[in-house]
Image: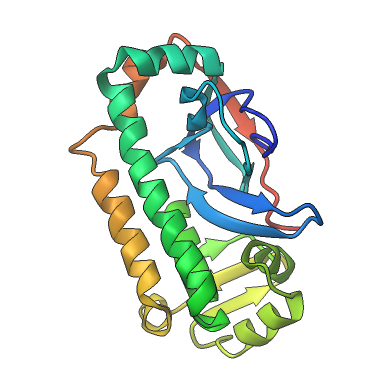
Length: 224
């Protein structure tokens, strides 16, 4: 767990490798994923706010590595402006778009379309067609039963995807994209637009923050 939902983040993370997921959880433990975070974004950026109601948690979905820094330092550097402020604001815009589109997708689209959107977005952030994940984990992220995921994935097995225990591979990306909804394309476009390297990059930020950041590694939890 990179940060819990009920309190401010203990650290702010800049991922170099791996993918994390932001989610909300009900009092009864029912979870729903809101968005993915990869090397294009920041985890714990809510540290720019001194107060607030904290409802989202963040955990690694895969093994990964990156840099972390105390939230106090992050807040100070954000207030100074420059490249860090630009990066955080651009990433927040992309995060808001992804979260809003995910909420719409969960409400109006079929489980088949939602599953395809989730798989494609996960693969995009991981930059790999091989996903170390399980049906149980996906069901938790989409807020549905495991049996529902197994039935839905089974219809595409050997055609669009293939899987064994703890591993799922996209074997026909074009076909999977044709079976998903417009939400995937909107999310992908938002991420591309707001994380365009012509605007601001992690490498530029690193020059500003490297003195404050600590290298870290984390194990993912999507393999069950």
